[in-house]
Amino acid sequence: MENLQTHISVAGGVVKPVDGVSFHIKQAETVALVGESGSGKSMTALSILRVLPRPGGHIAGGKILFDGVDLAQLSEKEMRSYRGSKIAMILQDPHSSLDPMYQIGEQIGESLRVHHKASGAGVKRRVAELLRLVRIPAAEERARAYPHQMSGGMRQRVVGAIAMSSEPQLIIADEPTTALDVTIQAQYLSLLKDIQANSNLAILLITHDLGIVAKMCQRIIVMYGGRIVEEATVEQAFNRPAHPYTAGLVRSLPKLKGRVPRLYSIEGQPPALDTLPQGCRFAPRCPSVMDTCTKEYPPIVTLQDNQKVACWLHVHDTTKQPAA
Ligand SMILES: Nc1ncnc2c1ncn2[C@@H]1O[C@H](COP(=O)(O)OP(=O)(O)OP(=O)(O)O)[C@@H](O)[C@H]1O
Ligand code: SF4
Ligand SMILES: [Mg+2]
Figure 1 (spheres, protein in one colour):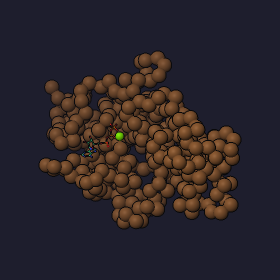
Figure 2 (cartoon, rainbow, N blue to C red; figure 1 turned 90 degrees about the horizontal axis):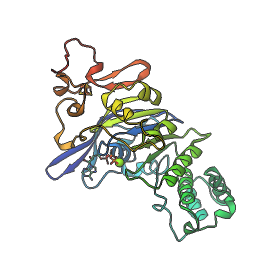
Figure 3 (cartoon, protein in one colour; figure 1 turned 90 degrees about the vertical axis):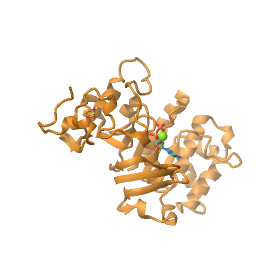
Figure 4 (cartoon, rainbow, N blue to C red; figure 1 turned 30 degrees about the vertical axis):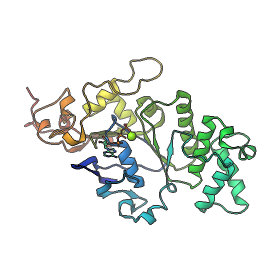
């Protein structure tokens, strides 16, 4: 996406949850989108699918390029051939999308027919294949089960099979802020891995948990106050983070043994979008703040190996002096 601007008109003005966001995701890649609550992660994801809050949510500028097509320009009708099809979203809550009245095989089959991925006798065979893909044992038999006859983890796998029935190229996985059951979460992540194995499927994983990022992702995009402040490989972000905010996130990580704490122990509050500071949005909390930082928003600088950062510390100009 290029310079994406997503705005929401509210009484008294406009909020800009996505304020000039650019990034790329390659085939077969898993990219993490991280940042504190309210930083604009979900709005970025919902913009890709064009399912913004109504009334008021709209794309105010920029491009969302998918296979060379700018999704931001498509009509609602054209968008339907992407949403839930070439681009799918898998939520962690397994109760959300299964109909209790139908056997799971019927529900997967219906999705195959809708997306024209199988018809007639091919449907049954493909249903079994999809159930095997998400590692549901005894696929043919389980296809006749109703959702309530399955465990939470298995239902989640069925939801994954339905998402895969349209043969998507991109899956967006938005992890909820409130922690779900740890077992369900682990099952969810292993499901994502299973469906990505041996395919070119790209995953955009939105999470609060850097432990998960380390396990699952190749690259990380860090959002702060509606903008990207750093884009890096996971290795770069963990070993030599360029932005003080990323550094703070990473520092809050390895101290506890066992399960990694959910983020963030950085002092201060994320900015409210209606009262953003002039200049760098992280300045009020930044340990390295300089004069320039409070005056002007930093440009994006590309460092070694394509690591990108928006921070004055990396703009080499001797006229910028640390604040006294
Ligand atoms: N329906 C809405 N009306 C007005 N503003 C909204 C609405 N939904 C979201 N916002 C604004 O957009 C900002 C970004 O929201 P978003 O849901 O993208 O955050 P997030 O990064 O996904 O947070 P979380 O980690 O809590 O899921 C919020 O801070 C809020 O100000
Ligand atoms: S631009 Fe300045 S305030 Fe912002 S993160 Fe960099 S050093 Fe800190
Ligand atoms: Mg969110």
